[in-house]
Amino acid sequence: MRFLDGIGENRRIQIRLEAGILQFELFGRPDGKRPEGAESWLELWGLNQEKLSQEKCEVLRGEVLLYHQRAAAFLMLEDFVSVVRDCDRNLIAINFVWDRATHGAEFHSFDAIRVATVLLRTRAEASMCIRVGDTQGALAAIDRGLANLHRSAGSSQRLAEDDSAEASLLRSMRDALVPKLPSSQRVDLESRLKHALRMENYELAVILRNELRQIGY
Image 1: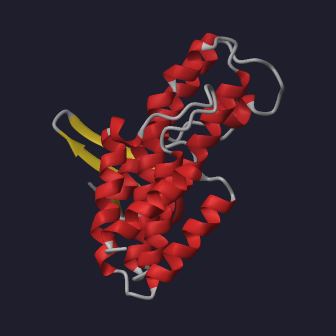
Image 2: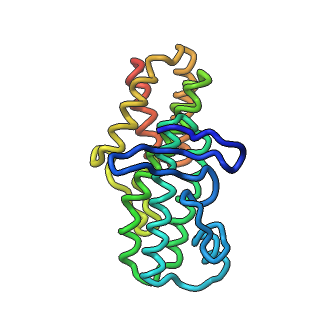
């Protein structure tokens, strides 16, 4: 996998596979297509207030997966800003489907994609912070990722953190970072914990308590 050298819009991502070569555009739809002249189906259908048919939901699902593949490629190439950009776009698309789908079952068909998107975005955001030595920022990004990982706009439910491999991966990242915190960070963690309790954000409070235990609180 590499960036294929080019100037401006001619630069692409190139992935070598056993069956051939896959290329992604860096901006717009990864495959370079413009549905009916629009940047994507999301932008085209987002212009009206119509409900989404089952067929349109499937088209959007395919488009979301295309952007997700590119975001994963960007992560491997350590272009973290582009990962966040594509993930944010996909989260908007998933919420759009949740708001407009004519079939309730569509909520569930996008859940797994949303979890993978939150995980990918969290890893990218934390990696950006680690790159500049901002351990506290990386921990905060992981906190947000854990809090949002299994929250579904469709059901308003959240799975227990221990029920997913994605949450385990983020906790492992967090556990690796906590020993790097200077002692002064304990005061900051305690302050964030008090604020979380005051705001009745108990999910974040549990995460912060775990962090404090890791540094011997």
